[in-house]
Amino acid sequence: MMCSKTASDAKLITLKSPAEIEIMREANQIVAGALNMISERLDVGQTTWQLDNWAEGFALERGAIPAFKGYHGFPASLCVSINEQVVHGIPSQKVKIRKGDIVSIDFGVQYKGYFGDAAITLPVGAIDSRRTELLQVTREALYAGIAASTVGNRVNDISRAVQMHVERHGFSVVRQFVGHGIGVLLHEGPEIPNFVRDEMTPRLLAGMVLAIEPMVNMGGAGVKILRDGWTVITSDKSPSAHFEHSIAVTENGPLILSGPCKTELPLASTCGI
Image 1 (cartoon, helix red, strand yellow):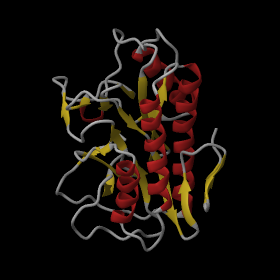
Image 2 (tube, one colour):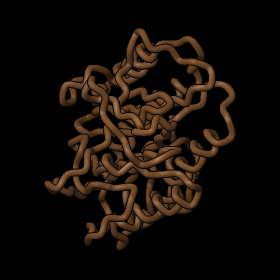
Image 3 (cartoon, helix red, strand yellow):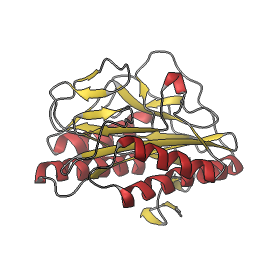
């Protein structure tokens, strides 16, 4: 993220060279490092503005530029979305983290001319079993989508893997916002919906780099945008979770560019900060 709104206008799909993918891995490792840092520090009483300052400082210290700040007028470096907020929550000095919250944190950077983008959802203290399942299923759906990101498959194969896993557990996927290609632009083609579209979708080719990002609601799939013009919440005020990785499609399988330092899937490994 930032996730794309669904749109009819096609965006250019670009294939990246191994050298470009390596730069994008470096960009995404800065993103991963910032998210790891926040996950270790997150605690009750902190403002969402404090989280934003940490992430921005982390990126700048490593020669990267926060990607979201100023993007179409977005006023911060992080998106911090709490409980029923789905995505694009604006950090604030007035909003404090509370015990029992689930906090979705989305961060992106530009580094050496290329973008990185990833997101996690974190519990603050103990949460109930259904919220725990929501986080687990959303993360699992992300990895199901990544596993389907193989040469010769189509975008709909990613979408199907995500949607089936989510709905099998009684949750709903958001349809108004989708994943996207990424490269020298934050948003490139193709769009990566978390639901199957009744149309022919692009075939996956080696060199594509994709930001796959399930947004999953505990209740219905409906969402609405608040009056700030950014913050997306669930229509029924049910909790929502969001996980995202940027991945490269390769002849040897999907490569998770924003992943931690271990093998996470067969044929999908990288080393994080």
